[in-house]
Amino acid sequence: MADPIIIAVPKGRILEEAVPLLQRVGIDPEDAFADEESRALRFRTSRDDIDLIRVRAFDVATFVAHGAASLGIVGSDVLEEFAYSEIYAPVDLRIGHCRLSVAEPAALAARDDPRGWSHIRIATKYPNTTRRHFEARGVGAECIKLNGAMELAPVLGLAPRIVDLVSSGRTLKENGLVEVETIAEVTSRLIVNRAAFKTRAEVVPLVDAFRRAVEPVAA
Image 1 (cartoon, rainbow, N blue to C red):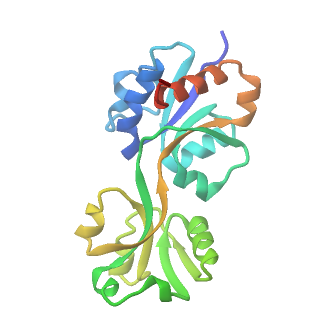
Image 2 (cartoon, one colour; image 1 turned 135 degrees about the vertical axis):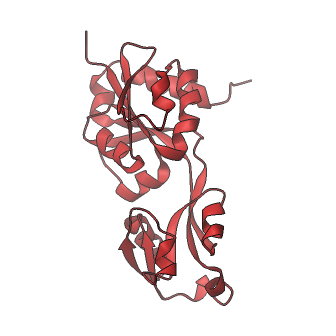
């Protein structure tokens, strides 16, 4: 029997929406997969030819790009930041809706106008996307790379502004920050390793199944 197809799925906010999507595709994960307290990383499914791995969102793209996983589910924010040439992203899964935004303290926002920026200092885990966005506007962006706790940067004087994912905006509000500019709307995508797409016959039907699961039925 051939090695099972590996599908990489991110921990955190996307996981809850990914489980029913997988089930619509005919892939029913074992119970531990949806348990964020579980320390397991690889999981069986209702299909003997498919296993799931649960990793950090940024790592999903790395596993797929290097062929350790044939497919993955990842936010368009990750694809924009890393732009792996080895990855094909054929399906917008229409889950994980959020936005990549610039935020700053409410007191600063009250007297600030983003249209007047010429150079800004920003804390973010998306330095490449952030620089490209502001370069297109003719604004110089000094990016400080953080992997978490972004909201602390303005409070502790690391950087007056941040770029991060925003969903409800609750975390920003609780930390005294407000959105002042949206860089991109974000949804999750099905990604595929290009070599696996060409060489593993099982991959193409899986891609088609995901596409049918999210696209409306034609009248």
